[in-house]
Length: 219
Image (cartoon, rainbow, N blue to C red; front, side, top):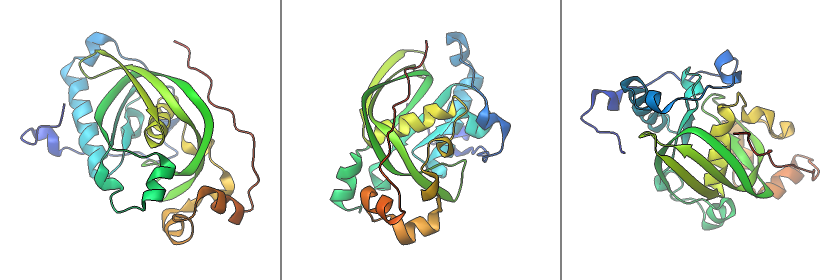
């Protein structure tokens, strides 16, 4: 449910930890149904949502705020890509995604075709790189009421989910990136942002490479 603007937690902000913090490299633990429903976890979720929007970002995982728990929030507002060229939006298969919470998610790749775009992270502030991801995924999880939910996602929505669920396994996009493409966000805006991925790869002197989709997670 949306954050209540009248709640004192609605204005709360959490510190987003940066690469090098051990919590970002640890396997986060699962939560029990009883724990999900506790005031402590409900408050954490609300503050994570507020922190994500304040950043702003399209996703935030609990390890990014120092909590080694299998929780993430995602939201991709239309205003975040409003004004972008239609071809840019279509290439990324980007559509608005309403805010929702994932707890104890299990991800399965449903379309392993590799799709590569520049990707950033709130915990690697100021940098970006080309990252290959599966085109479509299926994610099973519990929401903040501890109900079971299944989401089928493709395009940019699928990328967000893969990125955030990686955090819950102690992985950063740095582990998957094309290292030669690593750039500051300022230089990305100056030189690479408006180029199709194939043109950026060519300009960077990158060859086509074989990419394998992540293996299904064990339940």
